[in-house]
Amino acid sequence: MRVEVLLGIVGMAVVTFLTRFVCLALFRRGGVPACLERWLKHMPTSILTALIVPSLLLPGGALDISVGNHYLLAGCVAGVVAYKSRNIVVTLALGLLVMLALRRFAA
Image 1 (tube, one colour):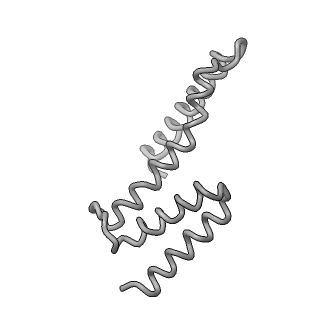
Image 2: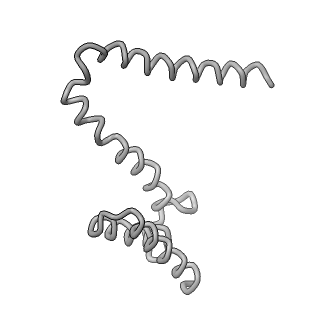
Image 3: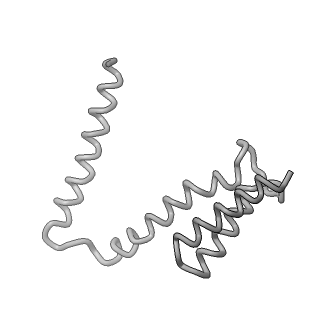
């Protein structure tokens, strides 16, 4: 293994440990403040959005907001289904079905 790869792994481990240790040390006695807890509650949603939206809008590396963008159409259907049903299994199933149908039957 190359030295720079090993140093990168060790550096990431140290940074991960320090960020977690500092948080544990800061909030050990008083707990997490309510405002920070409310803010942290939205982190998974924002991270997931940051991961998904580029895939929906930039499928070929360029902005594609058209009917021909199957990822965007399937994502919109999945978003509506998720909002209405609040069921992850139904959302994933319908999103996949729409994506498969668009790939199969659309040009």
